[in-house]
Length: 192
Image (cartoon, rainbow, N blue to C red; front, side, top):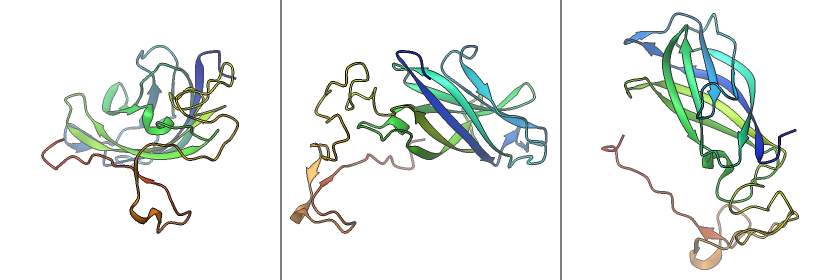
């Protein structure tokens, strides 16, 4: 059970792709360290993959406690004592801006960057927030008293959030009818 003011995150580190050290494929045993900002507090790691080389597979769970105000988690792929690549995952990518159903499973893939900032492979993982994933979100229910926060309904209401732009004609091709359109910025190829 998570301590007051924290969440329990359950990462399942699945695999990585195209890992390189100094431009050459990784041959040694790669493993992943999942941590918050402080590398020595509250981190966990997978076992070393002895067979995968540049395409290791772990499929291992790593559980960490995360304070409510933490804004990111780092997944760092290592080979021996060298960092192959790291991905900084914003907490908002799996908690979102709205209430997240309890124990909702998110599958994510992130580009790894080596210590110089150069692209170096991809890491595939899933994350589940144990015990009330949306409780601490600014749009969710207050975990302390079950109080309403910023326009969300507590108690499992299925009322959709009231932001976004109404869809033309109020119809959806994906069932359910009605709803809103929400834009997501997409950066051009000139932005890394």
